[in-house]
Image (cartoon, rainbow, N blue to C red; front, side):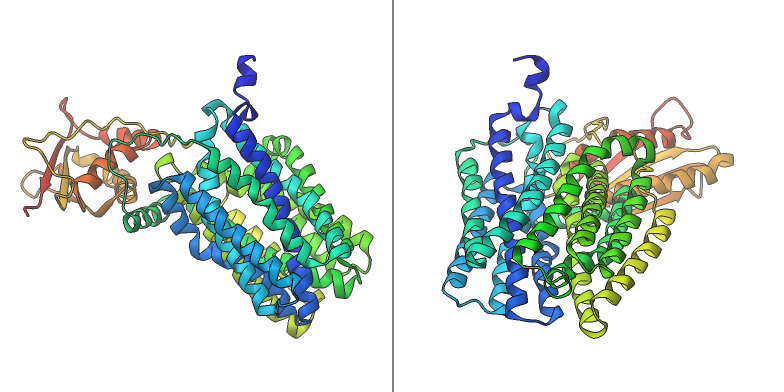
Length: 525
């Protein structure tokens, strides 16, 4: 095997097996989505109930994404993922049994769909976080691309297969096949002998990990841009997903096979979009792609609102799939690139939280509106709102402006100088850095220190301040408080190469050959 071949993601036996098993499982998931949406149109004609199927799919991700991301960063990821998959398997099997026995009601369907979504919510951040453990660093980009390709393959196959099975055997058979599709993932995870990475510092506690993830999101502008753009897109784009089952059945007069065919066209469009993305990224950049994808999706929603046959709807959904994968890849790539490794799972979880929260709120909102004014007017309203939100947010929060971020650990902070052994739980800790600044440059120095304020608080400081010595003009004291000695040691590990550039710019204001004096003061017990 050549060196190039050995660096391909599929050269890793565990990644290859898990990728294949995940594609099969995703096909089962898409089959379930078709079956659940179609079964609900049989159980209830209320557009709100049909839209709530989408809400039940997305609400657990909104509620559990961040806790799942925190767990993924502090516990054994293999065990967490295996447990989540077994939970989803049990929920799928119970739903299949109830449906085959004719016991499923609208609320029971929503409950089991929500249970399946809980398993998916616990799995999603872990699935993304373990990729770097399964492939060598040079193959990481290809591995992420392969995962996206696998999702689109499943999107192309699953709906058509689900529609055919519903036409032949009913939704219960679809739910049973979904349960069987999870078994491959469970087997691969059970056989995987994961080697957990060594850590010099103790793992974070769950609540502390949650707080650290939220703190990072509040202090990371690049991640905040992704979150705002995600909410602005999915809140309005959710109308299409929420109302598509009832459009297919009531407005287009399609059966389950026809509905699956519509979703297959969407999957094919997504595959085409995935193939075109590398070329489009080079020409348009992330911000241009998100603008184009949003406007294209709005156009497909308008086309669907005026569709009266399978042909036009299929073409519209093919373009919808292209726009959807372009938007998802741009937002997901932005989220991946905006977080260092120590908080990556939590950052991705917060992105998923924004994504699923907007989808949940949007699905409910558009379902209520459709029950009052009709399907076509609702799609028109959502499309117009998406266009306005896209243009405003793309101007105010352009995506891709932080492509030069280097979030690898810099490890350039020297080890703290201590005169005795300090216990990890000692604290709070006051850290002070004394600078000597030319009074003429004081205003520029204070402005530059605002970036340091954000970095300190992002990485663990609970308080920060900048003070000038009244007796010696030009002597400035930066002071920040960390809740414990262990948290300060973690700050040392969290500083990135981009942070180093900002810190060197601040240090350039310091006068004299000696570096700024750093002190660590620990509160007595």
